[in-house]
Image (cartoon, rainbow, N blue to C red):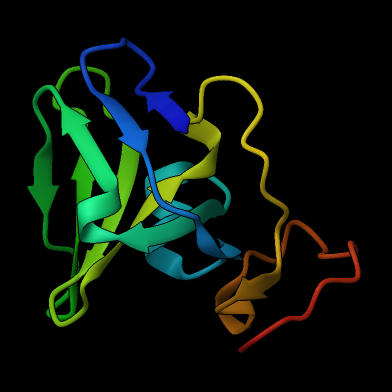
Length: 123
């Protein structure tokens, strides 16, 4: 089981399923929310248990983002029409046991860094 939390500890989560789709998102919204890029993995809705207050922010008409209302940690991303949810790999407490698979929305990445890890890149 993977366990995670926000920076202040008010929000915790448990992942019971097998994560998939480990990626780093470079879209403008993820860069603005995280300050750089956002790494995540996804699981089925029923495989993620969240405890504590989460504010859901709809940054677009296709998805919402789960944020701790106290410390501002960007923890979750949920598409409106999917039965999966993504959780922040940076919020995992201890080793995650997963490996990144790809970079997404690289056409929107900041001009202040390069992606040089050899993983696939999707525009």
